[in-house]
Length: 362
Ligand SMILES: *Cc1c(COP(=O)(O)O)cnc(C)c1O
Image (cartoon, rainbow, N blue to C red):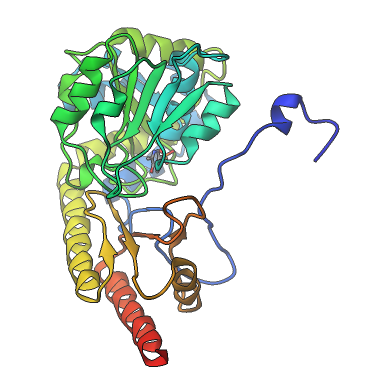
């Protein structure tokens, strides 16, 4: 608390990122990072870009990377916007497309259980919002988005539940809201879902946001991209150039381009993660856990026996970090990122030991 803070800063409720502990080596299953290293081609490109050109500013338009991504998805580079991680794109999008102040019955809508950065941005930019309650089983009640609003934002698959909405459901939300921007945050789409990217040509109000942090093992590089109609992309560009023209550095651009070129590596690593996820889901279910049907690189689990906070602490004692959200409706769940096969074998073993301990006490 400080008298030097602006009123705006007094009123903020900042996002709390998952811990990145330094006290000892943990199996990190708490921030949905990829257990596999980036493609060797990515690392090579970054090393080769470490040269005297770093004295020069990067290309503010990221032309080369936008062309690479446009080719990859069969779009025009004018339909692509690059950002310093997708969190930055989300922040820019709130500013670009959602009006501040009293909403007069047109609040921005997002689910009550979702990525916890959305309400943080809403409060930072003074955007009025209402949350839409997910069904009992955490499904998204699509019809509740058929109403007056000032914009819609939805992750698909949703976080932290991992639950996926089929393309038809997303498109019906987009169609029913032609005067609002509908942002689909597809941070986890590469782990088994179908993207709505092919439909941005058809719907000028659809903005899709992707990140290289999860499926492309580059959380440390900070790179995200948005895909949408040229008018939406120009809106984001206006915000960026009123804030910082050089949000993405030369090393990130070089690495990101190679990430898209090494398709084989991408396919192989994402397949491994999906297989591990499905295998771990089966094991946990057979041990009596409730596991939501996830199409992401994490699972969302609940034990009928041991409460989530106790589980979290026991796992931590065993050197495994998971994520617990002390929030209504989900405080008895743990979100567990999918690690390597070996890490997840260890995780399943530890879980079964913890359960046994509890069974013996009862
Ligand atoms: C991880 C995550 C992001 C942020 O990704 P960065 O590109 O690392 O900023 C955005 N949205 C959701 C739903 C996420 O889980």
